[in-house]
Image (cartoon, rainbow over all chains, first blue to last red; front, side, top):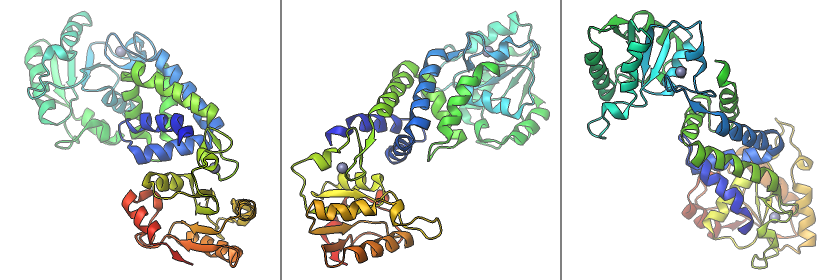
Length: 197
Length: 197
Ligand SMILES: [Zn+2]
Ligand SMILES: [Zn+2]
């Protein structure tokens, strides 16, 4: 149907988003078209705004709307205490628990021999630099309890041994579990019961 | 985090789409931000385009980009044969099967005593008008095999009895099943084996 090209193109773009497929993309697009004044146009505007303003924090790798994110810029967040996470989604999950008052460092993934990901492919060199420049005394390794997550934690622990107090989230993180799937209470418990590595 | 307001607003809007929730919206937004030049900006542009151009066909209720949709406007589609569906998604599912060569009529829902949906809340009066103006000889009732779908089919059959040949999709549509979930082959089989009501 020739007059559906624009709509089909939108469905195809939506279907490529994680968690969506062709069917859910069709449903979502039909829903948005039915509410195009209230939903589709505002969503388009908001996406355009975020496309223009979103950026990675130059310090920690968080995603926000300034070169230095609100957490790194805040005077209320403890300096000297860094929580290392794999992904921005994990940082956001920690923030939803609202229990951690230090700063973060987003690695952007995990070491992986299989996928050829080495320390320099992650933000590990930047982490080592921050240990010095920010006079860090404690690093909390909040990596996912997967094989690659644990390998990465061990690697970072080796690099930092003797330079800072190293802890990791302990109680509550299930084997094989990923932070972003956990409820806030579990994250709080795991943080409060953190143990030395 | 004050600098995440724009991003949080986008996540909230995405989370309200059918099939998405807060978690999948966060994942989708993070994914789009990482590929903002290649994905977020083009998606915003496409949404804005569709918000401007999408409209309901004045004749059949299909969604396209002109006042009369490509199917209603096509000289290749048989006049005199109308397939009645509940929803635009069902029409699109029929079109993917590419077996029906007539025209459609989208009711926009089903009769429902519980929800207070009567014939005038659907496009049933417009269907009755089309029977005359388009000299329709056969109406295929392709409604979902739900209680409300069957109630609606019976109501329309009563209205049209003696005026047109009435058929319904038969073989292949499972009890309680919805058209939009079916594969193309099932829809083709159901259409080919259609039986008089
Ligand atoms: Zn930062
Ligand atoms: Zn039409």
